[in-house]
Length: 488
Image (tube, rainbow, N blue to C red; front, side, top):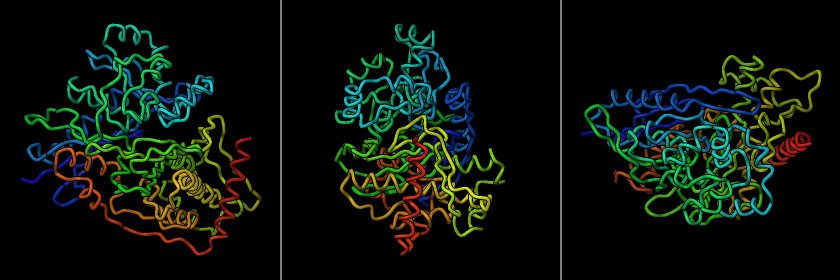
């Protein structure tokens, strides 16, 4: 009997489920549903957690029908990370809208945290004090949702990231769990002891009782009924950590970048928990076979969102893919530089009030110059993060593995290699997050191990850097000057 694994990828803008054929070593079926967002105030971003669950159930059912439930070995989960859901333990219903990772409503509170406490938080969690992470979001929901504190006092409140909510609902309330990677993004989890931290819980005013049990990334998370069959929910990781595993970044010094709405670069540091001195995040890469792998992470809040803005906001493009053709129609940006700070700058600056800008515009500037400047800004963001990672880790980055929507853009990938002065390796299977979830599930079920999983990645193309190092260094310095103007 053939065996399939379903990878459930609950992202920010869509929920997808993909059927992975273990024998053929490839995905054979995909189902996808878009997920809405609401913006009730400036800087606020919310989602309906019930919508996320029902669309997850829909795509899972579609995959079940395609694969045949008797041939499904298990389901692995990857998810948008810092987004917070509060729900009633008895009914499973959300008690408030989910606060999305992009939401900046708690920026004022985060800015008020004294330096001493910031240092404690950084030492224990590896995270800088920022509204991006989950702790201040949970605190805000507890303070502003009338039913939340009452439910907590009655032992009925659950708080967690999207994976916890989905696992709870998919197991009909039997599993209230998360994994080490998702917990490491909450700002409540000690990444050295791998436990919820009492001092941090007290500081944020969050009861331990409302948080899930934390398990390894390759743990059995529960069981789900699929019609007449019972299937294991096995293997779970935050989307970027799942992509790290799916990209076969299993050795110290391996690095991947995901080009999505934002840009996320993870640098594998092995069993060393490296504290960044350059504004990066230290995070759990994944836990597998009883061992913890750590990573340095750089998160840029806006990357692909710039292309979406050109398409939807300015009407410069009919499709995102058209950006490559338009940008290729000019040899360079004509001196134009773009800083993609629509919602502030993430690593290494963590400046939420900063906003985007174009500089160097002249009467000769055309639509093509502006489109190319937006594309090139994505590569510059990755360059800045790579420089920080090399400085913090002491390792030289030899190659960058890429995935995500914008990795399909040949112009951008070549420019990325040119700016970094190292090869950029694009895989045949660009759904690295889903692949990572499927492989973690296979490891959990004993159908693969870390070494075997790392061999499933197939290269599609290697982009080699231009020998014109000085030219691209000068362009990068121009970008850094533009960032300094944006920070003023």
